[in-house]
Image (cartoon, rainbow over all chains, first blue to last red; front, side, top):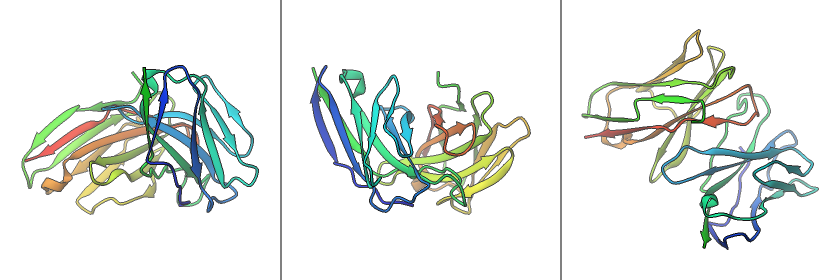
Length: 113
Length: 112
């Protein structure tokens, strides 16, 4: 499994953009980059994933570096509901891993009113 | 409601006992994954099933076993329980590999 490095914690103010970085320098060429978040007392929630190109959905945007060794999750306007632990996860597309997600420690995002 | 149903939500049992956790995946999802989350270990992948077949194994103890039935629901069996098995157990499902996972709300197991 590819190793990831994320800040232990980040803080933001409500309605401001948040950029959550992730380094995954050992990522393989076929690994997708997934982002999940986990709100207190809930199961993890899918946020976004991508392979090479930048991706957008209703929740967030994912910016992937050209060499794929890092990525940034962008929350365009943080809300109090976005306070959670955010996980960056490279995931294999096949082989014995067959898409299993290996969660690291993640980044604890605090959003201030 | 995420569409993934886990029962029971809470379970308290004694050491040495055996319990079964149940997961119903989201309609149409063929893959089921089990995860364990404890305070000191974070989210640990246990095992994956795809359309009834075991596809990947993680740090699952020999005392634990799982299966996926023809109707695609899955059960995680935990036996000879120890205090250290106390944790949140999550089930997730997906259409196939690499697709977005949908997690259930978990079963909180307390071993006393």
